[in-house]
Length: 157
Picture 1 (cartoon, one colour):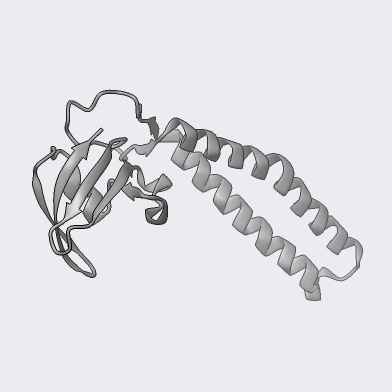
Picture 2 (cartoon, one colour):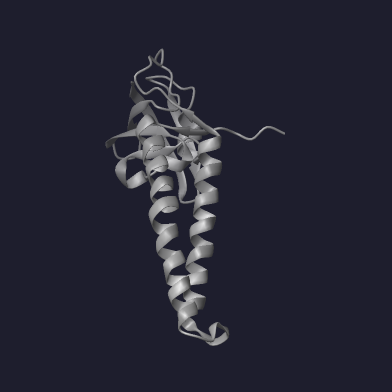
């Protein structure tokens, strides 16, 4: 079974690569120094500092593995590529809510870059998935955990 790609913008990939670089070169060294300092204090079997440093190390190594895995599956989306008017990952979509007439614009991104507060909606979310493949003037019904949303797509770019 093939794993799904991780969709990233160029900026998103660069951000994750920079985080990985920082964690492997700076954070890893700092935690190793904390562990060494705790060992120098003597009996590590009851050392809170040693245990804290080892827990921090485990969390750090988990994040490093996660970043490496994400980046190994990364497929960079070209946000400048023409979408032929169809919503796809990388598209900016302006919609109007049918219930109150308000308008919002979102960018459809991969789940690793999603941040709804910043208008970045995951392609895997109920809203993102419902918008994929649609065009301007299409009406969309989205079933979310908080209820049903009905909206009209005004613009896709």
